[in-house]
Length: 260
Image (tube, rainbow, N blue to C red; front, top):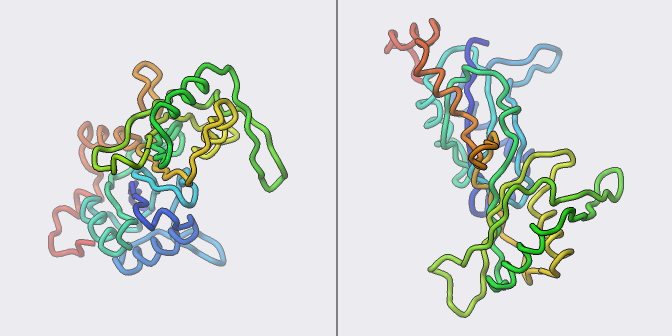
């Protein structure tokens, strides 16, 4: 391994129903089509060294999914992103790439910003439910796990929760409220559907149709500002603060070599 690249990708439209296993298969096909010089694991069954971090649940959209790949030869991250994006299905888009110059990407994914579109729910009802949820000290819900039914508190994980009116392009006769929330990544993980269960428990808020859920951002939670920061920013800052690695510099001086 001579280089690590960190990528941000999306799950949009109908592709939000893609499972994590399906995405893995599509991404590995894209690696082969793009002829990416992957580093492989050791052992009897070597496989491409790809590390996935905190994937969103199946059925939810996302603008902020992350993974890391290890390369056997250096490549320009921007060119690599373009090649991979061209080889992926529309909706599973590779939108950012940086060379990994710091450690602990997974450790920087401590919170997520989610948006929930509640069709059929009046804004006033959503606001009352949000107030009841935030005023509660604990909001316990149950979820079925592989070890049976588990009860846990959703309130402790929610940093902020707000109700907003529907987009202006929505039909006026179709009620719709938008919830935006920041959720810490705790154990057990609190998912958007758990928060919806909590809103039903404290305020009897029950959307008539399933909520459309999208992760807008994922990264390190900044306690002072209350925001979720870009997890790739430390790698970008390291690039501007230090010269490129010898391998990447040598590659840049050899335009006759492969570009991808």
